[in-house]
Every structure is written in C-alpha cells, then in structure tokens.
Amino acid sequence: MFNKIITPVDLAHIDKLGRALDCAADLAKHYGLPIIYVGVTSSAPGAIAHNPEEYSQKLQNFADGEVEKYGVDASAHMEKANDPSIEIEAALIKAIDKTGADLVVMASHVPGAVEYVWPSNGGKVAQHAKCSVMLVRP
Image 1 (cartoon, rainbow, N blue to C red):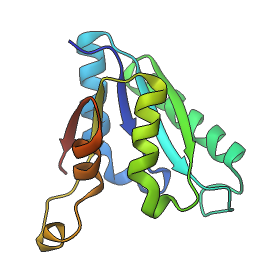
Image 2 (image 1 turned 30 degrees about the vertical axis):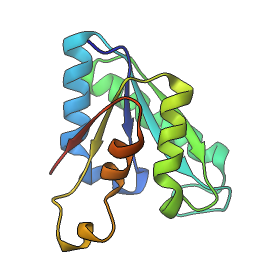
Image 3 (image 1 turned 90 degrees about the horizontal axis):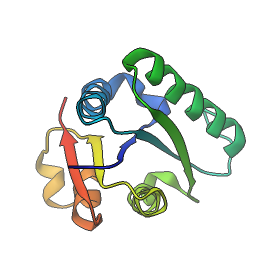
Image 4 (image 1 turned 60 degrees about the horizontal axis):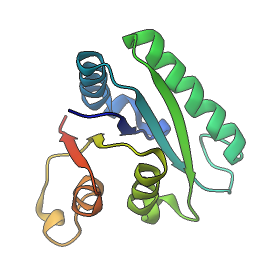
C-alpha cells in the first residue's frame, strides 16, 4: 500500500505529538514500513540546538528512541530553513521529495476560526504534497 512514512517532529513540542507518533508507528509495524522523522531548523542558534549539526544529532537521538520504544525501522532527516516558523510547509514538501516518502503522518490541531483565514501547517502540506497525508488530531 505504502513504501515509506514521513512524520514531522518539532523537538520543542514532542509532548504534543503522542497520537501522531503512535499512529505512524502502528502503520509502520502493520505494513513493515520505515519511518523518517523530519525536523526543520535554521542556521541560527535556538532553544533546542546551537547549530544544525547539533539539531541533527538530537533529531537522530529522538529517532533512535522511537526505534527502541516501538520496534520500528526509523531514521531522521533534517531540513534547514531561514525561518522555520514561516517556511515549515515548504521544508516538509522538500523532505517528502528528497526521501521519496509516499505517506505523511503528522499531528494537527482541532481547527478553529483562524483556519478560515490562515490554513494550518497540516492543511498546507496536504494541499501541496504529491503523496497521501494523514492528519492526526489530539
């Protein structure tokens, strides 16, 4: 059915990703698929890492932890963006293209009035990705 799953992760908000991470792992185990955990960072120092190399290592450590937790085949993929807060969707689309993933499993939030004006990250990815996108609500 699918060949490769991408699951975007925000290392600053792992506590809000539980259902999406569980869902991706369940699909990966069921279909025997690898998961690629994608994180987006900038070159500027931030709260999570001082540089992209440190961020990449932390993302890989996260992926290694998910392998231990769920027993799935997983890896990490980092994308750089000048301003991740406004370029997240483009960076995720780039990661989809680079990795050849055909399913994105990502966390989303319950839509509110704001989404009538500004679509959510998940909505933008679903609109522009050339693969299937599963949005997982809390």
